[in-house]
Image 1 (spheres, rainbow, N blue to C red):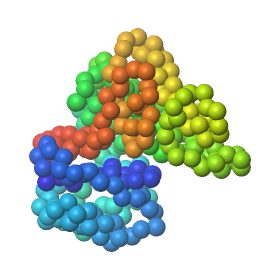
Image 2 (cartoon, helix red, strand yellow; image 1 turned 180 degrees about the vertical axis):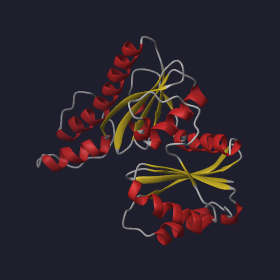
Image 3 (cartoon, one colour; image 1 turned 90 degrees about the horizontal axis):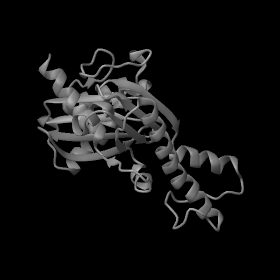
Image 4 (cartoon, rainbow, N blue to C red; image 1 turned 60 degrees about the horizontal axis):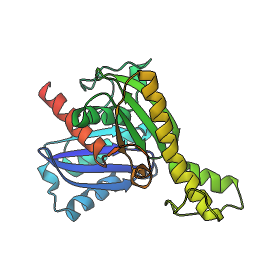
Length: 257
């Protein structure tokens, strides 16, 4: 079995693969205050919950955008499984040509998502990832990573709005029945959900105009299901995109080791 972990600023998404089959997906909170032993206990608890033998792993792979926690998570994985995890970073074989100014600065999550999108849906493609930040990555018709854009995340924007505007209430992240709200809650719901959907549509159109050809649009991220269904163009929603990308990269590097 393979353990795959994608560590973001809010959550660590983990999955266990048996060959190419994802046995389960789970999440634990990203907490800089936790020690390696605490993360190891959480991993073992999750394995027990899903009936996974912690001694049955043949490998592990990590992508991270939280460098201060990298050593802690590596240690936790080793304690829980006995495996030293491969970490996605400069020098990792991905098979993708990276055309940004400094490839060494590319976020591991963006690279992993792009690799999976090309493998599963083909190039050219865009990957919209709605998490702590809203990110879009661009893969051109030659399968090369061209770059992208980063915007405040849906929850991040909503939290900032509530914090800065004292009269605005805390609301659930859901779409209202109409775009034109007739009360404060509906107005906020419309702005955050339909506004984000419109931004995705508009940015996608601008990227296609800049590239000069249409692209396949792939959507992922914890908040994607709330927003993508309200976009007026076809979006391939893929909740396990990054875990699949980690598996693909692990296999590529193991075969070339």
